[in-house]
Image 1 (cartoon, one colour):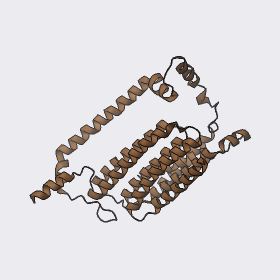
Image 2: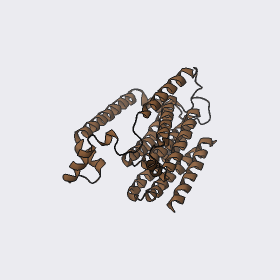
Image 3: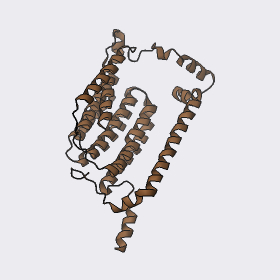
Image 4: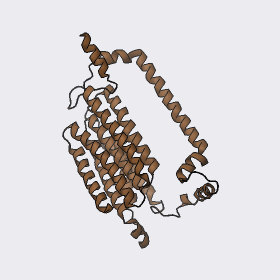
Length: 229
Length: 97
């Protein structure tokens, strides 16, 4: 949980760094310094604050709620970046399914995290080094949002021309996902489907042996403010 | 006008996040989480009109449903300590006691 939170903190920091990069061209600066930048800056600041709160929080129930808040804020960031499909996925998986799954886990584990037994120096060092490497990696990237970045010149023009010529779905992202990369999407769906079946089989096996007795015997009251885990 | 609306929603978002972080009890956090979900929908709407592309307004419906499901799941877990809790089963048991 802590590691994941630290990872998220790095991602948020990195995104903040990318958004705050000042373009060299003054015309570009006029374009980017608008409402979008303002909204992004506030949302990313809130994300960083939530991440720090998740790291410091010892009550797992609070962590689940804060993670759900994080997902809603992240979905807003995706939306501000025009990635509506990603925002949709983030909101449904992050805020919807993950909350339910994490709560189901809390039922099995207990809701208070023990103080960490080991020192934090080595994990802190590793995460700082990895974060610095990631920030260093962003230096080589082209400027944020420019049109002639290499990624826009490789296959994208072909996609745009082809989808116009052959009357494909009007939304270009849908055309790419469902038409150009149809087999890729089919493969992804197969993988997710297989994983789902596997998890269902595992859960069913666990319930047959011990699950039923466990659920009836133990009293399962939620422990909010400390005590037994 | 949409600038003012977006700014106001962002300010409210900040206040809700502060409550979520500081909230002494779990209920404060649940309420803040629900409020942030609602504010995300409002931000979606006002931001769409701010950038002259209100096509994504429908997504707000999905957010609203998710917000409801998330809050219900959290509150049900809080009340019963178990998401698969069946109230009808409880009543059945208490009748035979």
